[in-house]
Amino acid sequence: MEKKLIITIDGPAGAGKSTVSKMLAKQLNYIYLDTGALYRALAYKIIISKISLDDISAIADLCSSTKVHLENLDGRMKVFVDGDDVEERIRTEEVGLAASKISTYAVVRARLLDLQRGASAYGGIIAEGRDMGSVVFPDADHKFYLDAKLEARIGRRYKELLEKHPSA
Image 1 (spheres, one colour):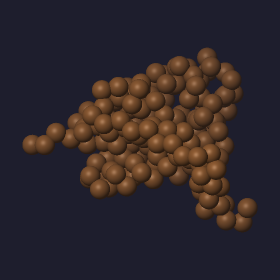
Image 2: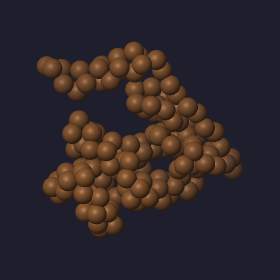
Image 3: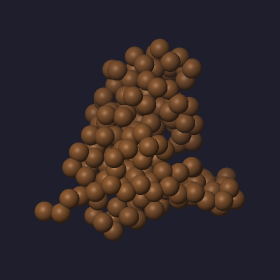
């Protein structure tokens, strides 16, 4: 039986990590792990719990009491918070900004590290995000870093926002 690989794709926002990761996962019939969704899931829980994004103690308590888990549904990992599918609710600008802030907290990163590593237990995964090859999967079989010119990254983000909010 052929060993399934762990492949990481790192890079800044708007560089095309998600697009490339999804295409590669589909081509290889691997699981696409959107690690940003995990941070968004915790950010969503913090927001609905009305916890200040600056209250690290309360966030630490929430991290220890919140069950975040992944399910592989048709080759894509879906994110659940306390048993609730939050996939659609975590894709807002408010949640994205909150996720960006809390991702800098050691307590949040530690909480999600084991979950991310657990998702790769059998290989066959494309893990996309920041610090994937250096921190989360330092022994990954293949590590890629994508970047793009600032103008291209801004253009991608702008197009993404227009698709989400066509009347804007």
